[in-house]
Length: 304
Ligand code: SF4
Ligand code: SF4
Picture: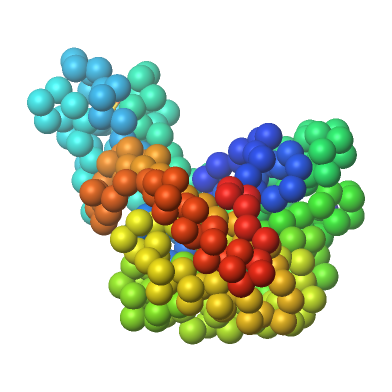
């Protein structure tokens, strides 16, 4: 049994879009990308952070204020205000709040604790052909922890998937190859200048890793978020489809339509909304995307 500890922000049971069958998905903290549409913004920072549900704060209450060792909390117009520049995510305030107005994104767990949690769902995995999915954030950012989890899953006969944004040294990927049943590899844009604008990083290493992973014989699906105004134009879709079709083998393409479900999380985390006016793709936009990939002979599914 592995002994490492890692930082995660959620464990979602009975997931059906993170690989085949019924899955238990573990979300790791920390990601090197800053995608403007990130649906899990609590996974970006590699440190624990506080989510503020200001609407739940009780008007006359001040219970959390004296608990903060850094004087990061105050009240304004009856509601709690957090100074993130002072907060170190210790969580003392969370325990003091009777209204769950403060919640901590990020908990440290050991490999053993997590494997015990995942193992409760083995009967569902066996019936549905499912397993455990490691997602995030970017799971490869905590490579040692991930490796031990994957090894223990293998020992227990639990099938595994790793959902990755693709940015890690190739040696990290290659070290995991014998332990992963399926890679879910996210791809956003081929145009590097715009990739940098919308994700904060170059896509050169990501594209190189995708190519090498495909050549390695790994089982993989390419996951493409379909974000109106970012990558839903004909030129971008064609470039993405061409790149997928040019890989050594034909891998299925999962199109993930943009939605606004993350907007509330941004507010709770005090993060900026970079796409406030963007709306989910229409049926026509989705069909155009499907055709772009199908036209290159690729199998397309919506969701994952
Ligand atoms: S998490 Fe800790 S440092 Fe941050 S506001 Fe709460 S008590 Fe203060
Ligand atoms: S303990 Fe909770 S309800 Fe009370 S002031 Fe703090 S955030 Fe608001």
